Each structure stands twice: as C-alpha cells, then as structure tokens.
Image: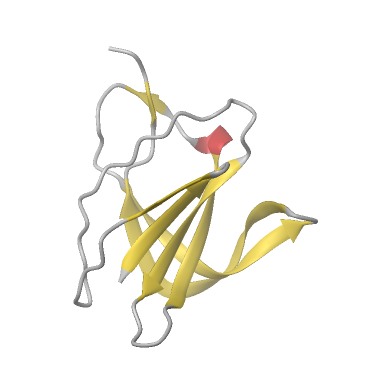
Amino acid sequence: TYVVLKVQNLKSTTIDRRGSEPCWEQDFMFEICADGKGFIIELWKKGLIWDSILGVLWIPLATVEHSTDEGPGSWWTLHSEVIKNGSQIQGTKTPTSHEILLDVYFALPF
C-alpha cells in the first residue's frame, strides 16, 4: 500500500509498503496559499496491472492547528466517496474499514 497527499496543485506519494499494518513515517511539507480549502489523503493498494484505491479522506485546512513541534497524531477513518460541488471537493463520506494515523499541523516559524 502507499499514500498519496494532494493539496492545491501539489501532490506527493509515499513509498509502497507490504503488510496489513504498513508504517511510512514520512514527513511532507508544502508551502501553500492561505485561500486553500483543504487536502486529500488517498490510500492505494499496489496491483499487478493497476492500483486500486482503499480509501480517501478530505481534511479542511480550517481544522488544522498551528504548532512548532510534531504531536502524537490522530486516527482518521478513510471513506469510499468524495463529495463535490462542481469541481470543488467538499468532503468525503461512506466510511471504510481502513484507518490512518496522521499528525497534521501548520508549522510555525522557530
């Protein structure tokens, strides 16, 4: 499995890991505009011919706290559907059995 993070016009991907409880321990840092609405986390399963999505999560930027240090993170339930208003993503719905542990924060200057 691997994770894809999308925010505004940026995208980053983890390396793929095997097993039922993969651990990536990977940091992502993006410089983004303040007018952004949120970001998408996607969990994918690597396939022989094509990959399949296991779940997706929309996190509104307005809910992300500011911090100078990493925290313990929070468990988030992944969903199977994306809610859109036109081309704008508004959220996700229909929980799956998959969860992901994320530590999400806006980094403050030291």
